[in-house]
Length: 201
Image 1 (cartoon, rainbow, N blue to C red):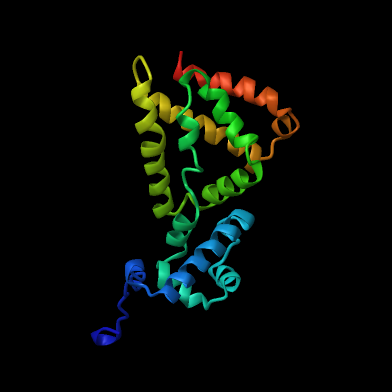
Image 2 (cartoon, one colour; image 1 turned 90 degrees about the vertical axis):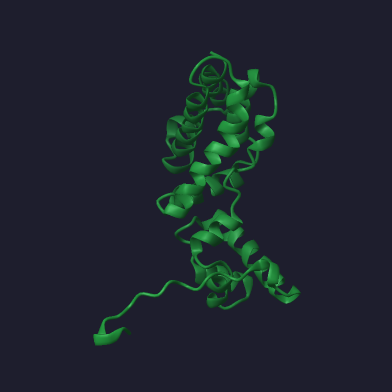
């Protein structure tokens, strides 16, 4: 408390430096990350509380904050914010539209759904939002834009990411029956070909 009775705000303690941890500390950290990864994907960002993560990891909730500083920082450590997209983008450009759609709705849909929903729930936190902007720039625009021909290459890739987000929102957040009741083959073909127009118009 400051002079005169005024309360001064203090910054939260800095998270533990991982490089200085002993084996037991590293094991604790790993257990926390594993528990967080599971609960974030299963329950979403909001419902997976620090207390629940700590219980799953078998540690005190204060230990979670001690290691990571905040729930948002732990989330970014536990969740693959790129959703493993790198390998998908490496293939032929001419078939990338359909390949992207297939990846998100056919290949491991349960894990993709959980990860996407957790990211969508957490996106209003500045730390998470900044990370998603970074992923768009580094995981999508940087590798794809140089491979495109014509104008507005970076913008076209950003719009491609927006189209992916729109599809996932309709499928996994809104659960729109016009999409959820449709066959995956039709969605891959129709939406994939629409997205392809941004890549190879």
